[in-house]
Image (tube, rainbow over all chains, first blue to last red; front, side, top):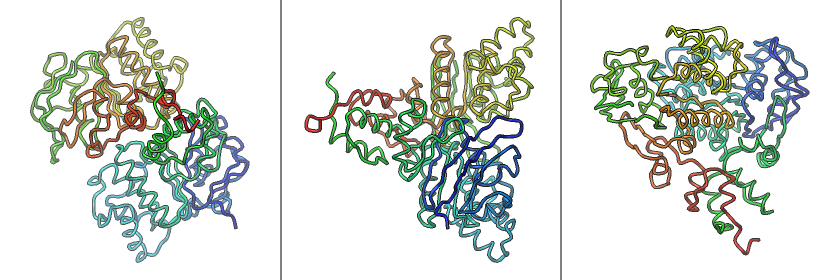
Length: 286
Length: 268
């Protein structure tokens, strides 16, 4: 039995008529981890998310080689809906994934589609709405929900089937900072409560820094670093382009560690950095 | 120049979204418009160019009341770049897309070419002139949206969340370019954003809306110096601002910040 939520083996992919966007990907995501997928735009992050859910190559066609395993099973030849029972995917343009009139119908639709019996549907639907902080909203019309609430609703439809892995592509790109912080808090709660593996594409690492355990860094379609967040960040820091997409706090940490030959803590919040820096550093004499 | 006087707005059957807003944006300013989701930022900016009209109060562009105007009447003075770049794309090539506005204005082909070339160069899209716009990356489509607006040579450019979904390198490129046209050509920039760091680094003035009310209007340093509870407004102090403020430093980025710190004697 594999301990990996997802494993890519010698995976290559090109969209129909396009160039190769993923090149020889050999990387795994540990079960129970909170993994961030980082890389400049166009590096192949979204393509990787779609490959995990099996919609690449199933819906997109294209050319591919190698394999992707979800919880130890090859996605090849599996129906996308079967994979979705174990791995839930939320894409960036989440609005386009909403199909129903009311919040309850939206969540139930996904459950019925998966063939759950009607009495179980009701129960799972209510529980999922509760889990995303929308308890008792099953009769709300979609247009009565704010953008942030609609996003959490979609998360509820993905969660309702109880997948063991959750993949999210830039879930907060249209949200204000407070909304983004609270969505990640929610994701972390779900991750902890169900020991669910979370894999997330996020440009603003400040939001995931409090929770992340592992990181995969992509550049031009190849994995250039992977492993614990700490290890992957130090490798990425050595590259001038990648350095600038690391969280500001970690740019400071890695800069000082390298320059002064010291080791600083696993900073997750600004306050961690401030207290350690106050202890060790003073202002430069100008 | 844009000015609003006691402007109010509500969508049909809805709660008021803009309450009695008075503000004046002078020529050549670089303003960030901040606020939580649903605070009224986009609505207010749409009133600036007659995409919608207020329920009460007046909006003036260059001193002229725009109550009777339509967006097309203002298009060569005010450019608007929408949140979703796909909604704006109509033509088969990047070039034609950018040329659409100037051609519509019946400019000479030579003038059209000149303005298109300038807009493409400014947005780094010159090499993509013949490309089918829909195959551009998200970030490139955003730049195309800006190029389309620029080709009409507006004096005021309103940009709604144009850095969403872009990585920090793309953001920096786009923002440096906006800074350049603001400083070199005096084009007024009104930037709607959720990115606190961008507001801090690029805007010279920040306006914050909260539930349709104007609650802050001052320089970004005042907003981000750590003395205000920004969470109430759905905002956040950017990380580097918090670090710098705690050490009474002026650093704007990680490298500067580190350069301004030295190890205390005992730790060397």
